[in-house]
Length: 211
Image (cartoon, rainbow, N blue to C red; front, top):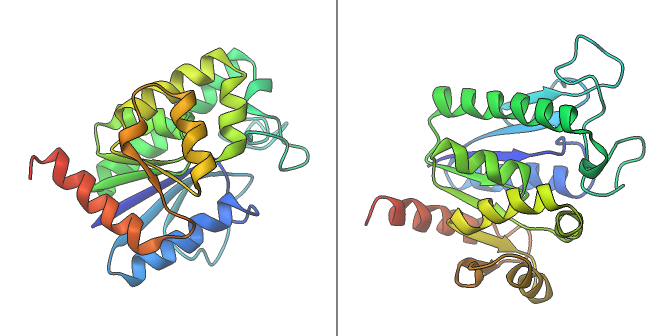
């Protein structure tokens, strides 16, 4: 299958970013073709997979967004949280991210998108019309619960996603309580769960095609 991974964290970021690389590497070993769209401060040489970047760099008018790429909570020093972006910045960020995802959809023609967070990436995946899977993590759920606009995006993404993957049972309960109508599509799969994610993609695509 052709799998497009989408993450608001760069590949080098501890935790979520590095998990993107692990997932991509494992999926490729199973025979899938994998690409990614991520936010970052700059390009990089020697990427472990084909990647399209949204370049965010404060004070740089040549960057795609002239502010540092946002994060859910303050897991990276010097980066604003999504809640701290003003309306113009958030709209600019979403539009630039949308363009990159749309370009990958046109050129790569993925069978499935795996948005590695629920809200911004998940909502943009929804808008493509491609079958998609979500991963939900604690920090973004906390942040989404504190922001009406972000929660609205996350709710729409969650209620339309093929599956929502969580790492453990407490997180499953948190997602079920935060978003309406998603309990039956929640999947507990401790990271990296390569084989399970591969099976989930196939199930989601088959369901979309009515198989």
